[in-house]
Amino acid sequence: MVKKILFLLAACLTLSSAAMAQDDLSTRLSSALSRGDVGELGVYFSDQMEVSGIGAPGIYDRRQMISALTSFFAENHPRSCRISHQGPRENTAFFVLSMLDVNDREYRVYVLMKREGEQPFIKQFRIDHVKKQ
Image 1 (cartoon, rainbow, N blue to C red):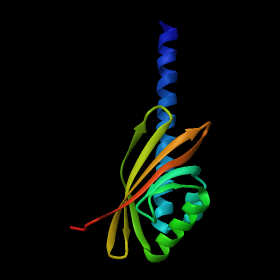
Image 2: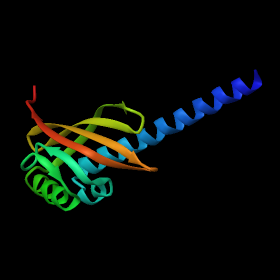
Image 3: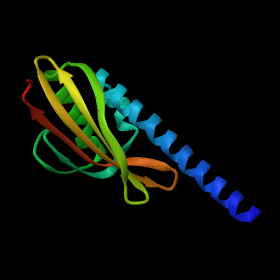
C-alpha cells in the first residue's frame, strides 16, 4: 500500500513538473513573439518544420524559417502577444495557441512542439490573420 501511494505521489510530481516546464516554455515563446525576437524563437526551430501563413506554405529548415519570420516582423511590428490556449498533444508533444497583436491587425499563432530527448523543438508553425472585432 505504501509503495502504491509513493508511486502515485511520484507520478503526480512528474506530471506537475512537466506542466510547469511547458507553461514556462509557452511564456518564453509568447514573450519572444511579442518582441519579434527571431533569435530567441530560433533556439526552438527544428531542422524541418511545417510552416504556413508566412511566405509560401511548406516544409522549412531553420535558415528559411529565420528569413521568413524576419521578413514578417519587419512588416508587422508586434505590440503584444497573449497565450489563448495550450495543452498536450500525444506523449511527447504540446501546442501553444497565441494571439499576436501587430500594427492594426491581429494574428492567431499556432505552434506545435515535440520533444526530442529533453529538448523541445517547433515542428509546426502557423500564422493566420483574424479580423478584429
